[in-house]
Each structure stands twice: as C-alpha cells, then as structure tokens.
Image 1 (cartoon, one colour):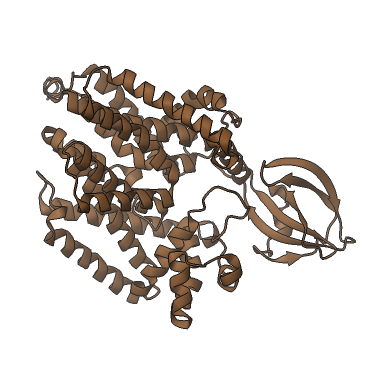
Image 2 (cartoon, rainbow, N blue to C red; image 1 turned 60 degrees about the horizontal axis):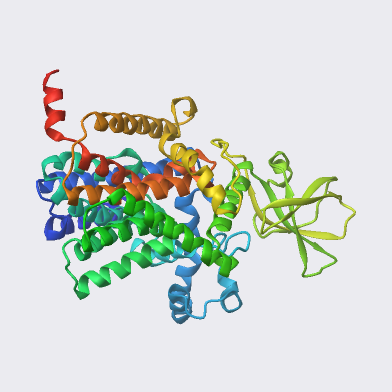
Amino acid sequence: MLEILLTSLYALLSLAIIYQYSFFQLEGISKKIIAASFILKIIFGLALWWIYTYHYPDRSKADIYKYYDDSKPLYDLLFKDPISFLQILFGINNGPDNFHYIYEQMYNWYSPFATHIYNSNQAIIRINAVLRIFAFGCFNVHTVFFCFFSFIGQVAIYKTFYPYLSDKKWALFAAVFLMPTVLFWGSGVLKEAIILFGLGIFVYSIHAIIIYKKINLKLLLLLVFAVITIAIMKLYILISLFPGVVFICIAKCFDYKFLILKYISILALMVSMGYGIGKISDNFNAAAMLSFRQKDFYNTMRGGIYFQRFVNNSTQYDNIYFPAAKLSKFKNVEREDTIKINFTDTAYVWDVMTYNFIDTILVSPSENIKYRLVMKDTISGSGIHIPPLDPTYLSIIKNAPIAFVNTLARPHPFEIDSLFSFMAAIENILIEIFIIFCFFFIQKPTNEKRTIALFCFSFVLMLFILTGLVTPVIGAIVRYKMPALPFLVIALLLIVDGNKVRSFCNKFI
C-alpha cells in the first residue's frame, strides 16, 4: 500500500511540475498531451518493473534491481556514518582500503575483472542511494524519478529541433516521445534514462551556444553538467557526439559548402588522432579497448562460471573458467563465496586482460586449493555472430559496415523469440520502411537544416557502428542503440518533403 501511495504521490508531483514550469511547454502541443506522454512513460516503466519482477524474477541478473539492491548498504551508511556516506557519494578518499566493508556488500560496485575501462556502475548505485532518501524502500518511486529525469532530456531534444520541424511537429513529437524502444528502455531504473537526460541537455545547450551564439554562464554550466553526466554513464556516447559537434562548429563558423567532404575530413582526423594517442599510451588505445569490450561481451554471451584459484593460501591466483554446462554443480554458490571443488573435471585457465584461454587444468577434491567465485551466468539466448575485432584501426574500418547494418536491422523477424524482440523487430521494420520512403520524397533542405541533419546522422552513424562492433547480443544492441533512434527519425524528417508526402497520401484517401 505504501508503494502505491508514494509512487502515485511522486507521479502527481511530477505532473504538477510539468504543468507549472514553462520549460515543459512544447510549441504546438497541448499540456494535456504532454502530461499524457509522461504518464505513458510511467506505465512503460512499471511494465519493465513487472516483467523483471514476475517474468524474469532473478534480481541478480536484472539491471533494474542490481544497482538498486547494491545502493542499500550505501544508503544505510548515511545513518551510521554520514561523513563516510558523503565521501563515497562524491568519490573522496573512497578507495577499497578505506570502505571495503561497504564494497563487500555490493556485487556490482567493481567490475568482476579488473580493467582500465571506466566502470559506470558506481554512478547509478550512487543515484539510487540518494533516491532511497525519498523512496522509503519503495522501488517504483525510483521508477518515477528516472522517468522524470529522462522526460526532461526528451523535452530538451524536442525544443532543440522544433524550429526546424515546426511543420512536422507531430512527427517530431512521435520520434522523441513515442518510439517503443525509447519508451521501454528509457523509462526504467536504468542507465539509459540518465543518458537521455544528459543527452537532451547536451544538444539543447550546444545548439544554443553554436547555432544561436548564446554564450552565457547558465548554458555553459548546463553543457558541462551534460558532458559529465554522459561521460560518467557511457563515454562512448560522448565520443559518438563529438564529430557532429565539430562539424557544426566548422559549418557555422565558415560556410556551408562541401559539407560531406568536411565531415569525412573530420572523421579522418579523429581516427588519426586516436591512432596517435594509442601509440603514446596503451591505456588510451581505442582500438584495443573496443576489441577488449567485444571479448567481454562474448564471455557474457557464452555464460559459464569464473573463479579465482588460490594455491596453498597464497594471495596469488589464476583465473579459472568452467563452461555453462557445469552451472548445476555451483547452483548454491554466490559471488565472492570461497569453496573447494568436490568433483573431478577439466577447467580452463584464461588471461583476464586478453580474455584468451591459455591452458587447461584438471581439478579434483584432493587439491588443497580454494576457489573464489567471481561471476556465473547462463548462455545468452539472443547471441549472434559478429566478426572478431582485432585491436587495430584497420579492423575497425573493415568491420564498420556490417556493424552499422547489424545495429540498424537486428533483430529481424526471423530472430523473434520474446515480446522484447517482437517489439524491436517491428520497430526496425517500420524504421527501414520510413528510410526507403524518405528517399522517394527527399527534398533539398536549407543549409541550416542540412547541417543539423548531418549532425543527427553523424551521431547515429557513430553510435550504431560502435554498438555493432562490440555487441554480439541482440538484447544489448536494442538497448545500446536506443539513444540514437530519435535522432535517426529526426534526421529523416529534416530531409523529407512534407508537401510531397501529403500529396502522395491524398491520392489514397
């Protein structure tokens, strides 16, 4: 009962803010429709909660619960040691030696395997810990807050592109607020909701600064806040935005001639810079990071059990892997549990930094060896084959086309195996039909519209390629491409001739 009351109360409070503040007023759209779109987000957020509570009840594998559950020890610390709570919250002297007694209670604060790639789990755990102050243990209060955050971002996106699409306002509204993938994955207690929030503020502020040349403290602070938010959540989204931003700056500051050539030159310069930086330091080798990330996904896809193997109570250990077929032997073992193996079988030794198997060993009960569980997972049901990515820029360029196509078109109808994949496949088909439709009714846009369309296409191109290069799991592809979907439709709306479309449609009415 408390859950229903508090969730309803915060939903009503959010609606009151939406009605009250001018920021949420969208030109050409009534307040009732704006409010209805927010209520629709909450409905989809609750649907996501229901599915991961009753249909897929394993909380340890559900992203909406993993970081929420991990935030509980941090929240409890607020009442026991407020200073330590604030230190962890703001990252002040919060190394593992200082607060190991808190981190040991969190399964997702650290990545299971040490890498130099930033772990964004900590940010979402911190956000949930703060929201617990207002939620009183009610999960769906978090749902309402995350819906409100992402709604702010979506409103900002609509406001940014409305001046160019005022004659197609309903199509713009649908692109920003009504796409099923955006509604579903952008309305839950997930990183994607915060990404939409940061992405909206970013395009809103950068557009005002570059296009309208409004440079003031408020916009600069908004831009810095948005950059930090996106970078903390998913740095590759910020990287995907960068070429388009540089392109707009060059087009606006100089002229609108040879726009495509200028964009290709920017991409070539970025690749060259990335190659040079990677030669200076391996920690900033983007090609190696992408290759590593792909291997990470392949390990997740194949499932299995990962242990640290300690010999004779030593602090040194090997990384040991058992295939997913052995999961039943470890069904009562939880992460961080230390056990002795009570059966004889073959296991694999693997290198945590390259994700390559380097040896096989025979394990048996007679060993005086302890095994600490790092991770276990089942085989992914939506895995696909993607070309292996070598840690070179040549490999990235060679695999980029298939990566883009995979992200755009997968899942297709023959890969439907759940309600999630059905929704995504239907949405993909509609987008592909719309792309073909737009090319039949393409117009020559104004210089400004062409520049904005290329910015949107740039973001879509970069994000789709990066997603397709490293992601061999269809479910992850659907989620990771979500932030770019509104920009894809917006770009198409900018180049399609609305009058030709209306004339064509009138022939059949």
